[in-house]
Length: 87
Image 1 (cartoon, helix red, strand yellow):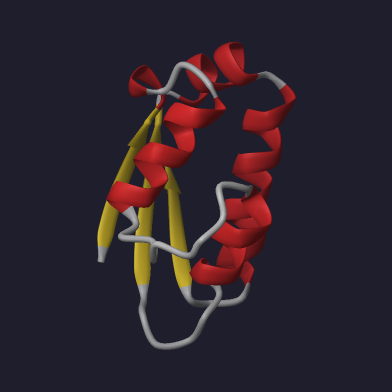
Image 2 (tube, rainbow, N blue to C red):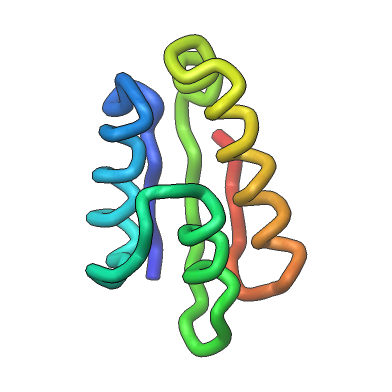
């Protein structure tokens, strides 16, 4: 599965999690927090490629939460079940 997370479309935490739910096809019971997203991304069985665009805008809008989000993606990639591309 391929997904693009574009910082232009994100204005706050809620819009980030709504976009993640749609783009990553997260299950309904997935919480709206980074730990829950990490758990889904690192579950064996589905390989995902996540492209993150406009990171500077994302960080400008969400500050520390954006940095934690990006770090979570990179941590998930270390497990080998998701590949993260920064554009």
